[in-house]
Structure formats: C-alpha cells, structure tokens
Length: 349
Image (cartoon, rainbow, N blue to C red):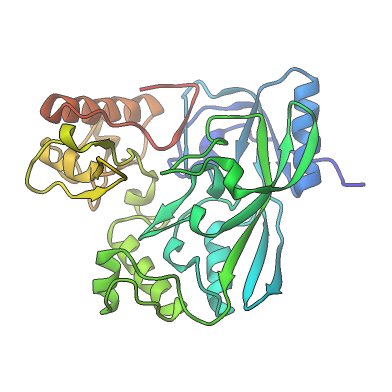
C-alpha cells in the first residue's frame, strides 16, 4: 500500500511556476508516485474539491487570486529500459524532470529525444502538450501512456499514442482534467544516432545537411546552445527565463488567408494550409525584444519575442495585459489571431 501524498505548508503557487506568478491554492499536496497521484486526486474528487496538476509549472499562468482547490505536485520518479528488436522502450514516471530524462538517454547513447533538450517541466506533461522543438515532437516517439480516469476512478494502462489525438502543441488530454498521465513510454533508437535533423537552424549549427542523423550528444549540446541564446533554458538569475516558454502558438491558416510580409517565416501545414511564425508576426507588428508591459515588471524577452517574461515584482494581471497588447497588435496589423500556448488557470486573455 502506498503512503498518502504529503500536504505542504506553503500554499503559494508562484513558488511552483517558472513565471514565479500566481496566488495561493487552498491546499497543495506532493505526490511521490502514481499511486499517490491517484490517492490525492481521488480524495479531492470525493470531497468535491477542484484539482490542479502541477509538474514543473513551466506551462502554467495562474491567476493572482490563486486556485480554490487542491494543487497536486507531480513528484514521482522512475525510468526503465526494455530492449526490443534493436530499439529501446523507455518507460518514464510522470514526475520525472523532462530534461533529466533527455540527458540520461543521451548519456546512454540512445537517440530520439535529443532535440527536445532544455525544455522545462515534467514528463507527464509532454504528451498533453505534444511538446516539440527543433523538428521533433512527442508524437514522433510516444508509444503509449498509463492514465488515471477520474470519471471511472480507474487506471487505464497502455493507452496508445494514436488514441490521444496528438497534433501541433495539443492532444485530447489538453484542457481535459478527466484523464491524468501517470507514466509514458517512448520508442528510442539504440544505434547511437539521433533522430533525423530536420530543423534548418539546427542543421546549420551542426554543419550537416537536413535529414542527417548525428551523435545524440552533439545534437543535445547544439540545441541547448541555441535555446540558451534565446533565454529558453531555466536560470534563476536570468529574468529572460522567468517565463512560460513560447507564449503564443504559431497560427495555422488557409494558405489563401495568410498575410504576405517580409520577415515572417512560413511552413507547409497540410494541404492548402500554412503555419506562420508567431515571432515574425509579433516583430512585424512593432513589438521588439524587451518590449515592456505595465511598470516594466513584465516584458517580452530581451532575446526572443515569443516569450513573455516576469522581471520581478509583477503580477499575473501585468502579464496578461502585455499578452493582450501583443495579441491585439498582431490582429490589427495582420488580421491574424494569436492563441496562448500555456494553460491559463483562473484567468483568460
């Protein structure tokens, strides 16, 4: 029998988000494993309490009023390997730090996850968001997940990736609190080579042609260097990393509706569709790096316009005011609607 999840004495959610913003929860409990997650969530459900799952807090924007319910901190650890026909099946508990997982696979000479280096948060969040970067996304590697179904109060094992509706930065799990990821399984290369390098900037950095497979360690170091240059690797002393990562997703439009403007990158997104660079739209709408919000307490990153950052002493209201300014500016200039990537808790744009 598992021990019950422990209740923390500090209710501030700002202490558990990378933005360092957000009011208190009514209660915060720390779940050290899958059984404790089931116990904590099941107990809150039975008591009629609202539940907020918190991993690394890197994708949460929490209202200044906080959360009137139980916040469950996912802290379960555990990684297992199983070799299958020249590949490796990696099973990871939801509370494992994602970049630690990537680093461990690279150290073991396994390929596949290296382009997802430096992304903050916990493993359980990666299928929910279909996390992606530098030409790779979770959908490319995910085999299945174990879920806790809050409606039936049962654990569903080996739910296949194909059943999760994985799409650009989303899944059927996103915005749906009925199912909670307890662990995830990934299929990795065991031949000591990375996933094919598809992202042009990364290929140039590595000095290789697109689709080349390289040493996973080399790919990881190149990705980390690129992310650091954009203020996208967590550093408590660097306010550019006090963010929720990219705040807006790249909009996908019918090609006929896409604005034509210099400096806005675009990529094919299926038949008759195109994905536009949200960063390019923001820059071409007059917002430069470091553009400040209310009182200078929040701003666009000084290195990457797609990240909204907390400079200290700010509030979630400050951040949302800046987000609205950027969103409305892009809409006025290009007629394109930007949508937030982070989960907004108790607040809205």
